[in-house]
Length: 287
Image (cartoon, rainbow, N blue to C red; front, side):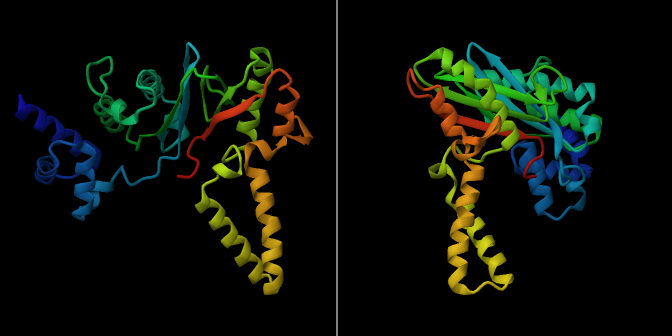
């Protein structure tokens, strides 16, 4: 039984990498059957064919949302081309994986080891699908929102229900359910359109701000600005960057004369409405 499993893993590794039997066997033995580590092992050994599919860029694909009893999960699964993103086998795989992901509350490590309907793991089915379709396919990222507070989501240009290329989810907290319902769906749409990177300034990763400031100062220096002016101008530009990229400070998409913070305040007469968390996933963004 153990020998059959080893042979199956060698076969799968050969299908995905194009590398010969003996090299694949050595990789499988060295990594105790871990396919992803086996691919890394072959690449580190300098076997060029090991990156046959896995080194290509998978920047297309789908994002799927699952919702039940107030809980919501989102998952991005990538392919190399939009053609494959529309392939019925790929879409079917994505739907099944999204359901399992919801049950695992967005834990991708658990997901890869979870069994699918054919009694094979997600990881095994993924490799079979790659072999069949001939493109790199990756399960990139996921997020789970529990039902504490209230969650709202929006799918932009959906290909079918709860499936699309851009999705946003926002979690709101507050005392008045009616007020929250009035703003939740609209705020999810705003997030999809305006792509904030944080709720407020305190939540922006310091490395992002430092990098942006470095770029701003370098641009000013290259444009011939004097040193005594660079800091002053850079300070103004970084404030603008923060206001344009933090959700609460952004101009409200439906009335640009006010900020999102001011919009929420309009509905907070019966208790403050707060943004507890949000995400915006766009297929392939940052790859």
